Picture: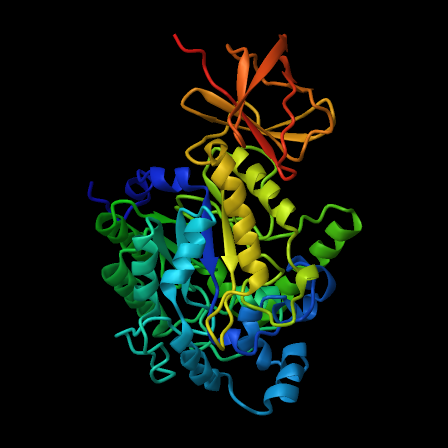
Length: 488
């Protein structure tokens, strides 16, 4: 169908089935910031807001925000830079980054992602520093040649598709520090720093170029969109018409009066005081929820909570977005203790899927040699190993009547459903050989299949409670059981 630049028309777009079925995507934050690879040591991005609000925009654990932090002399990043890099400008990280590309093997990356069980890959084509990972024909008026000489986007797109996965691009539409050099210190200053002037035309031209060259299956915008709603809807309509299986995320808040007002310094100061007071009160009352959930824009295909998740089944499709450490970009100072426990990573993924979510799990490659650090590859392998045996409880499924239950041994259970088959996944290895689960509804079957080895498990029903006889398997991470309809 042909889409029009109206809310009514755009909202007629349906989430593509491939996205709903894929469940696992790989995010890639990689760029000039991967050379210094430094950020303040915080356990969670929300700590920047609750503990360091006056400098929250330079205290995030995100290494990809290094360019802005350098411009704030009192920041930890600026102090680190002076010690290790002297007065070297951020732009000079371009040469070592592009030199490291000599060792880059996009096909090897794609094989690792496929082996992890991913169905799609989202590459950061341009982050907030404005540096583009493709040789863009849209010239940056403020930094000459501010793009890669090598077509990183194109090469990775080809490698990913060769492995049977979908390819998508992230683009920082709301923030570009090459157009807005004034440093930002607080969350409100950050949100209010969307560039005007020539930037809206520049951003739109680049996104259209990405669509024309690479046909990405997702346009994953970040922060906001610098143009008014009508222009934004026109861009979305043209994208949907160009890419049949396309989708857009929820970070497309168009330029409006509120965003323009927040760009004014007197307004920022007032709003900062209100936001900081609100956060303090929430923390004092124990009501503060860590993580970031974007405001709902005029249109999106799916939601993207960041370093957090939804506690209940959501009708609207969503995607939990997170790194393996508190940073998306590579932080060279991260040790094993900074990485998410592999077991908990798989279990949180299962929880997300049971509530109508996908997991967009980030990898942060090194800048100097384009390699993916071993702790990240290890976690991808853990995911791939579990999904290889029990992925039938994940891929292509939808939420069931309820997401959660608990076994008689106290283990958490998550439910999914596909084509009449209900899957119950126990998060852990049951302590008892036999155990029971209170199901949302009784099912017309007397046996279940243990997915890890295909064993047939006898069932004993009492109302909605079912006992699984001699069901405990070997996998300590999670064990999935398929309740398939009886054959007629």
